Image 1 (cartoon, rainbow, N blue to C red):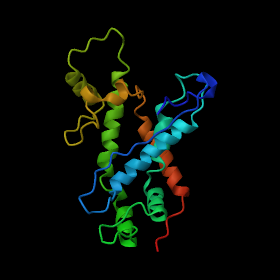
Image 2: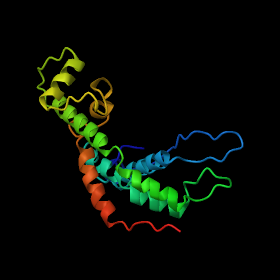
Image 3: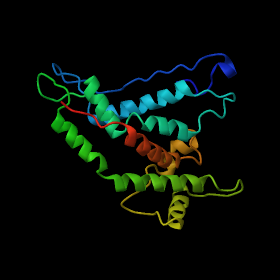
Length: 209
């Protein structure tokens, strides 16, 4: 994807978007099926593509605050919307032969599982967001000898040093906040969850035949 927002205003070229799926090949003689996780991830990437298509800003350095991309990418992959898409497009099929559209019983289980492990998921994002902000509020003259020691101290200060819920990403490979454009903005994932909840509340529940 070209840099979001580099529209006709700036360089005279429309944004070009390409989503490439790297899904596992099926076994010989078997149908190519997608797991629910695969489908969720696919529509998450569709959200990023939408962001790239819709972004339109005069200055190339300003069009893509992470909360814009994160919010859009969260919408298509939300559970109720995702289930509705699965039913209408017949993307997800059972492992039965011949393959059939996702059944009501399967859809119900998927819907019931949407709250599974949410406490862990929320906490790991909170920890990562806090760590991000503490990295990016250091002065230019601050000397950090050990990233691991800084991380431990940062999480202790916010009472988020939890052995059983580590940060989603450790400092040594937290690419989002150092090279991915999310510097001091990883908290946007929390904001995106709020926007997504509002979106889901107005999307009609899918009807399963």
